[in-house]
Image (tube, rainbow, N blue to C red; front, top):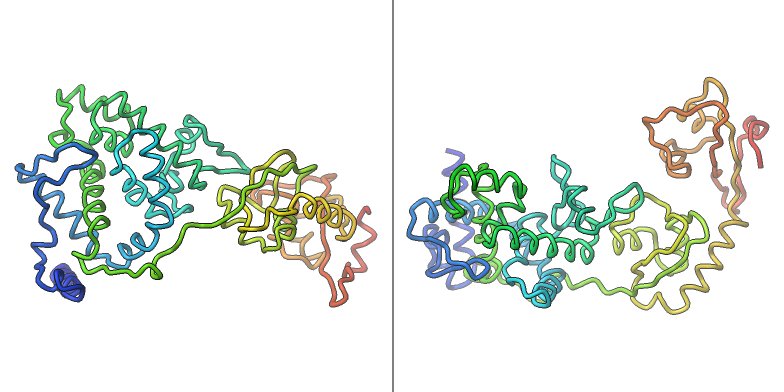
Length: 374
């Protein structure tokens, strides 16, 4: 009964769009178009199970119209860049739809297995393709860097398998697993290989995304330009951090806030930048004079923000120390880059910043000052 209700709702939604959509039945919406290809390769539509697999992905996608609408809103922000990079690399334009299949064009989405980012790289695969993944930086969330890595990886898969359908299967299940199935089943035809169920659906999910995104009005999605999300506009600067520096100092020098810097640089992890050179994206127009402002704010941070060093005593815990100095426990973790699950030991030195009063003066608890070093 629930399934029937969903189908009826989907039928109603399809009938709420443009004139072509009004005349379209649910069967029409799911039916594969004649001669549709993927990455320039033909699809064997004459096989009953191929048509069936495609129709399943079409119906599943169209049943989640809110999600499809978000794809279409994000497309102008991301797909033109992917398409341009594919053209430069001499690779099929259809591969741009893979980013929608993998992440719906979201930087922070992750899988239970540990894949992350726009292209859903596992950490080691990301490193193998030139991305940095460590405690401080995760370039799987950087759209531009991860796109280059994804294209490099896809090309290496094509060099191995010689078929874009097999490339997509390998991207989903792993190249070694696919090679093993090819050897055992004695066929290199994706459409007749028995693969993990997720991989059997994967190429058809790409076909469904291609069909809907390339012709959204047919399915009742009509967006005006102002309904879509424009590309991010930013300046790029390279700045040398003289020492570990809070991201909020970068934000202040750029005339913006912490969130904007994190949004423009989603690969950055945590609240601090390590000493050394960093290439950063700033709000458009902020690069002008940024280097001078940054040095000034770094100097102000060093001289103006009150801080003390607390030496951990026997019997201390992080929560006890936080309570003692009337600061939030998460702030203590941020300031000292501490993992909550890692025990602290007597003799360790912790940086503590005080709360400030309305005049900007430090509010140190009286009974705690004697336990701290300047």
